[in-house]
Amino acid sequence: MDNAPLNVFADLRVETDIGREILVSADAEVVTVTLPSLWVGRPMLQQLSNRQRRAELLEHVHGGLKRADLVIEFRIAHRVIALIGPQSRPNLLTRLLGFGPIELKIVPILLSLFKR
Image: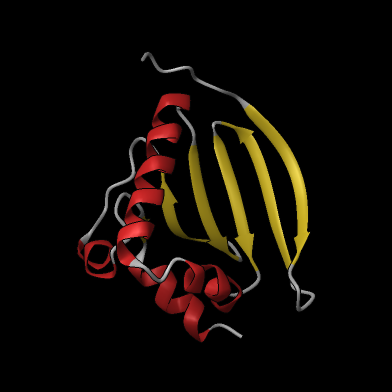
């Protein structure tokens, strides 16, 4: 199947069950998910605790992003902490944690852990 590049434009605010706001925006081929803190994503990660299911889901998402030529970046404040898309480069931390095609940004993640 050939790639079908998409241009996506969006501006969305999602409120978590504890009242924290997650921003989702898109500008052409980059979808940005901005989290208020690293801890907001914890409930989602708990739902993906099964390593095999998580790997299968992320590979499926990655395949769709490659076909659509889209990138999803996850941010905390102005820091990109993770990417998934056609050019994402998984690293040692990614493999150790079982996040397949996601490129985790180690330094920004560490800085976000200690940010108030």
